[in-house]
Picture 1: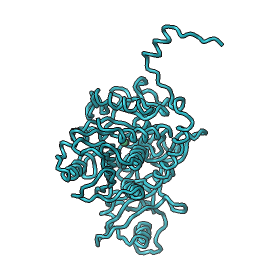
Picture 2 (picture 1 turned 180 degrees about the vertical axis):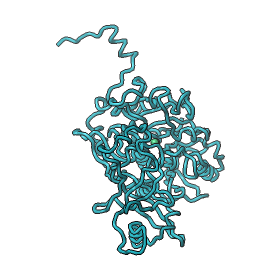
Picture 3 (picture 1 turned 60 degrees about the vertical axis):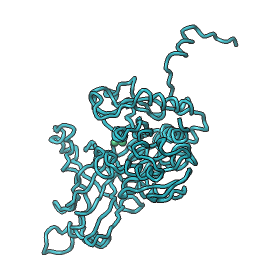
Picture 4 (picture 1 turned 30 degrees about the horizontal axis):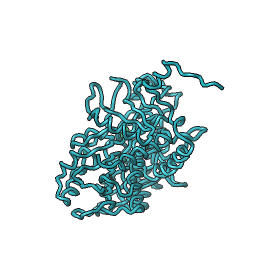
Length: 471
Ligand code: MN
Ligand code: MN
């Protein structure tokens, strides 16, 4: 068959115009198989690490299995040494020392391990119409109507009057009971339907059912509440006032699963941002002896704005870098000024069913690879670091050189809403920072969806960033 000669226009179009294809059409079978395999570990992580505290425990366990040791302040580490630093059981920094002098800067990946959820109030337990409930205060940005009639598990810690700590994890194992918020039946929902959508379920209606059997006694009131407290006392040795010094979090009780006939996607609670936490964790665990010192920080409190001493708007990260720099006679601020960061957080994948808020030419799509986002924020780019063209160029070049399947994407149309990440807080420390992460469908819902290929490409993007030699 004769070669069909390209027209001048076809030649020019090929040379000049952007032509991004679906990642599945660009990856070979080996790469797709590697992606599928990678996501098995990811699902296991999602099922084990459902809260920031559980994530820290699991991260430390995985890191120690790969030879990481607890950080010793003042110790002079050598190239290839691996260590982790835990901040208040809710955030962790993992480091692999590089061959280059630390004053040349570090390569940092930053992701968060907190996710939207329902926190118990400090006086949670009450009884109404002989049903026992926990009062909650939601954490992060949720569509409140999505949370009733979903099976919930309970996680966290209770500090007792004597200072001892009880760990709670109930509703996850086979045979465990779960908890649930009720909703009004459609037959009687006429007045609920008239509420504006953000109030379809109100914050004070997110009350979790925790029991219904009264204590067998005729003398006292609140017998169901007493019975629940008796069970909690037997199981955990606590009294009602111990709940004041507790952090109990309700999250969806279901497990991470494959989605679709083709099993191309992962469905789970908490993928924002445990998808970037797991991928940047696996990258730091897998590198051997990098040229530059590499760090992954997995932080808390992103979903409430990064404030607080376990969030990245606090000083724990620069303090840690200062401590490390001091050992080598370097100044922490010099290290940070020479450093680069991939702020790893999810992006909104275009949702064809709800396409209206997306600007299709600048939206990310599932299966199109890891997303590099120049800026986030709202309105006129407020609350963002806006990566420089130079740094975007550097990252673009790096990803292309290593055949990373990647895309750009902005969070929705201008003025459609907006959102932020930790990028600005790290940029404020004088790092060069860009947002890099995974496109997600149904972000912040009890069950979020990602693409297995995109998740794997996120992992690979962190690996090439860490392994890239000094400039
Ligand atoms: Mn996030
Ligand atoms: Mn989020």
